[in-house]
Image 1 (cartoon, rainbow, N blue to C red):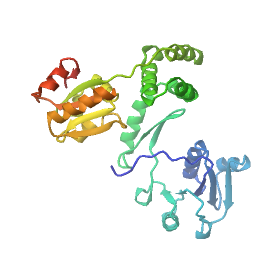
Image 2 (cartoon, rainbow, N blue to C red; image 1 turned 135 degrees about the horizontal axis):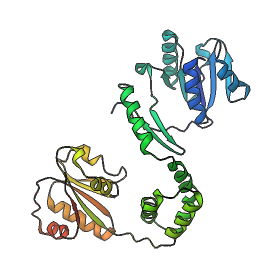
Image 3 (cartoon, helix red, strand yellow; image 1 turned 30 degrees about the horizontal axis):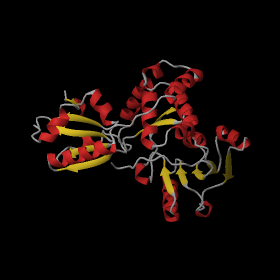
Image 4 (cartoon, rainbow, N blue to C red; image 1 turned 30 degrees about the vertical axis):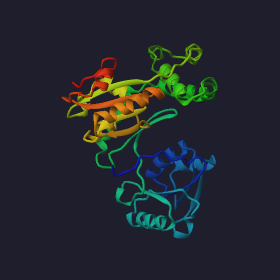
Length: 313
């Protein structure tokens, strides 16, 4: 992984854009969506940006860029001119000042790059190939645009409004997580179209008691992650612990829930010990097992008779 994925909060924070052409217009539109405090330096700017200046949405310094204009207060610098020599000078100056810099369409001179985005209000999906294949990323984005309902924006706003109410209703993090999983995974969510309908469904689920209990799911894997079933992927995303032998390929582990605790073991007895602890602490566990592995431990065999075991395709 060449680039570390991160969402940076630049609301009301100062950002410098060098250049006032078409490229600057595109980047400034994006920065305005994040409510950044934008300063533009250029001898001239497009009329499109001039309207932003008149509306006090951006600050414009008319003139050529020079090092003294680069203040350490800036959290980002964007070089958007068609002069590569000038862009590289901006890159060098920003580096010397310890400021993150992006030279547009020049990944060799970027501390960060901007991904392709699918926006659903508060929900943002970012896709990147590290600049290696823009066409592939565009195709992936088109696929996601068709699969992600525009209703997601309404759901995200609704959940944000109800977070404190859920915190007051349920004392523990596990109970809150379970509530949101039950509510958001409920079949009726797919059919609800208005805020009022969401309110009614939310009230019903909020009145129910949430029982946190241990759960064991055995997921069999083979050679390729694509051979996992949809049920496997769903269960892997619900796990609080993920237990696996040290020869389990990392790509299978990475498909599990991001905040789940990863536990590597070297024997079946270690698995049995962890499962016993999980029972006591009411923890949901996923155990990744290689296809063809025969369980010989009697305690694990007893667990398996009552657990969910999902075979690979």
